[in-house]
Length: 479
Length: 94
Image 1 (cartoon, rainbow over the protein chains, first blue to last red):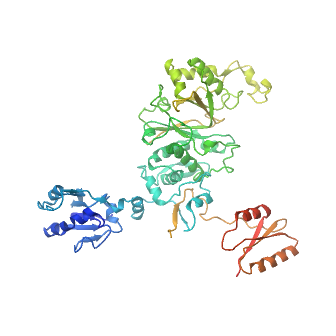
Image 2 (cartoon, helix red, strand yellow):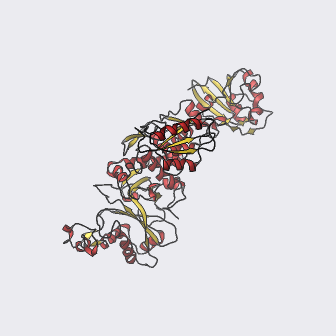
Image 3 (cartoon, each protein chain N blue to C red):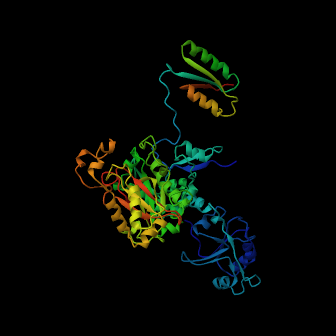
């Protein structure tokens, strides 16, 4: 990095009216014996006639000094910046230079102009050019007449929808979203078990359409997916429908304006849509998990493009999903549930929690198959109009869970293979069991989301191999 | 004219950046061979002679022609060849 000399350094551009305004002062400062060097961003001959001009048209000094405005006057002593003034402010300049009459004939104050190194995209370009960010990914050149979007399709990098072409500038910009180093390893991505760096996640986040401020959520999501208990490899390879469902809790939801309200599980919110998609692209591009390859889903589900939403914590009478899992309310987390689909719980008439819980249980009983128990977990997304029924009656989340588990029992006789004229069912060994629970004791989760109108909650069904032998729900703190 | 764009590879970089050629057939028996005249001058001389030799060998051949050598084949023609042939030969000539 190039250092500034001792004394005063002044960054200018000729196209800035304030710089032109103060041009006559430069020679005066120099004549007064001040050690002054001028760095010119757009014209090495500006200011006219001054001897100590450094050509900074390539903006290297400006980039390293993080100049935001021209003019900027910096005082350096013993290799340390001790003062910095941006724009023209007569009293400040007089005080810093010790020249009491400096600019006495000029207006007292004029703001400067934006520095050329701060123009959109320029900072990222300069960071690459001057080595502030080192990227390791292979660079692929796209010929002049070829559309970069089409190149991404041809190379098999997309989920079938267009992606944002991952140019180095966009990736550098994305990396501004994290303090982590580009070469830091985030996790080992199945199915090819490839070590994945922050940089590679950032590239896929660009392609998914993320903003840099989403990157910490994406990184936590990728880390969660790599946890052994989540069993991403099996979840990808299964012929079943499921895929990671990402549920975000904590303050970051609001900071990045995620949707937990109207149409929370649907389209239309950039953060919801692109965070879930970034994880899918990481699995596809880095892990090598593609449909027809290791992904053997019979039908799949639309959530395999993206399935990510936030819990509405502010309007919920209950503790949030992450608080239930032991995190503080001001901690942001991602929870990954191996699931798919949105199965409705329609109930417009229940006004008591008992009645509404029975409706919910009736819908939950069909998860996987009415005769199959203890296979898949499920998430119940309780909508605001339904939650108000439980709130009015003073039901806690645990009370509702207890009630659902209690209602979701069936006798072995009803559930075994062949019963009710259906070959599918539990093995004959369960026939004598009087009560078989539908879900494992930790197999139901409740979150609150949705728009204010509509008595429609939802079941998100889990992978049929939910639990320790398959995929367990995982939660990861967002850094 | 814009400069060549540079993209950063989002993959694990386990395969070459350039697209590889499909494996070449070991032999032509039982395959339908498309002979594509790209409308470049005298290209048909070569492609027709090749067709005669292949037909004499008892091979199954089909002739196609691009409207102009200057542009990529129309999608319909591309799809027709994909559906009807396993091998395609085209001739660049002048």
